[in-house]
Amino acid sequence: MEQGNKVMKTGDWVLTLLITAIPLVGLIMLFVWAFGSSTNVCKANWAKAMLIWIAIIIVFYLLIAIIFGAAVLSSL
Image (cartoon, rainbow, N blue to C red; front, side, top):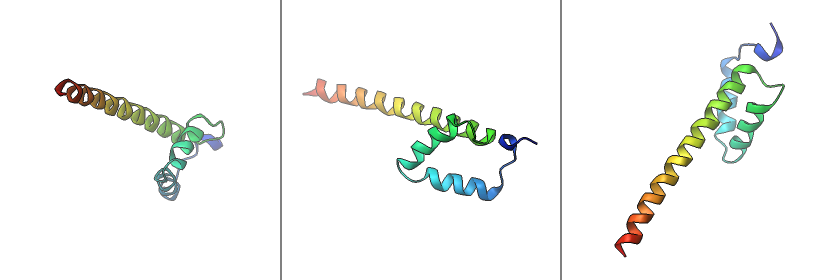
């Protein structure tokens, strides 16, 4: 089995989740894991999925902020 396709153990995932829980460091590591050439394929796919979810959440919050901001400004 190739190094990049090796199955990740539970301890590997625990450490991965611990690192992503650290503000800013976790986001940087998601980019490193998602686009790094030496990253495990499973971890790279997971990191890409997490980045997509983060982008969706940011867009959702921006839409909510714009809607509520417009409502507040129109009530003034």
